[in-house]
Length: 212
Image 1 (cartoon, rainbow, N blue to C red):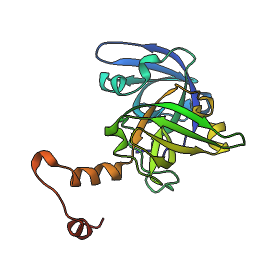
Image 2 (image 1 turned 135 degrees about the vertical axis):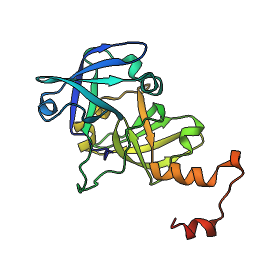
Image 3 (image 1 turned 90 degrees about the vertical axis):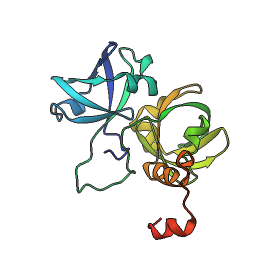
């Protein structure tokens, strides 16, 4: 479990692709010394396990499912990635609950703003957009952001100066592909409301009884 608050930006040292399990080496002096074997790290939003430590470099393993749902097929030496260690029980939740389970990818369509802030508009497929609501939360490349608006084909978020300076989102250009994780609470609500295959539907009264 993560919060969507990036701790450091790392650089890909090597990416060894394999049919079953791929190995990703990341250089990050600010974080590597704090890691232990088996620890979970969100790499641009994807939860991966540390399998080796080499000074300022650490290795994580990646299954085919991760590669298919993310933009990681384009990883190259020098690619920058956002990094966050799993949250500790009892920590402040300053972002939102992020599982590190990427739902899919999104593409930056527009980036507006001339001052210190930016508004970014991302295109996404309808199944992903169903889990995004105005003023709700979304994780983009592992960064917790508040949704400004949603349409039938895209959604927008605001980027404050701290976000632009502390993670890879400040380097985005139109056409950049990002990893997207929608809000876990929205997924459960949609599951309860929209289990059409089973024929189960809940009324607003039943949702209130369940505490929603």
